[in-house]
Image (cartoon, rainbow, N blue to C red; front, side, top):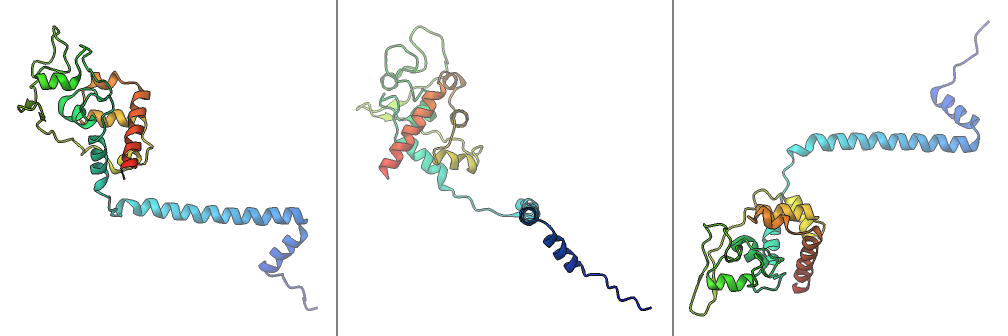
Amino acid sequence: MPNDFQEPSRNESHSSFLQSLPRPQRTAFLLLSALSLGVFIFWIWQFNTNLTRPFQVVETPVSSMDEFQNALSDVDTDGDGLTDYEESNMYGTSPYLADTDSDGISDREEIERGTNPNCAAGTSCDLNYIPAQTNSSNDLLPEPIQVNTDSADEDTLQLMMSGQADAGMLRALLKDSGVSADVINALSDEELISSYQGMLAEQGSGQ
């Protein structure tokens, strides 16, 4: 007797299985299958990205730090007549205190007099301080000091320029710029963030 029984194909079995499910379960099954496929595809893409990323050459803009320094050079947060850039990178004074050593004489006035703005009279401080030279009109003629920007990566600079830097990043930037740890530690997070936001606002209004 011939055997007329034929095994159904895999597609027919799968279709019969789906049709046998109640509609809610069928919908859930299809969604779960699609989600699993999407996760698998995403995993493959992510794996490929992580594998090839170290070999990709990414062009980074060179103007970010220049723009940040230019913006900083025009800001005088404490209003003592010295820009934040001059205080942080030339004199080592606090850009947030008009009188860094609290002796009653502003930082600019002490520099014009040739005294140390970081050391109050009668106290023992850094003996290696060299006052900036001035001309007959008392115009400041400081010797420029280059800021060390080698340690600042581009991601950090982009965050700073976009207004997303936190107090820790600002402290690191000040430290890399040569500001003494005592001055940095004397500043609160609120003072740092406030001055940083003011610098960004002034930069935006000047564009």
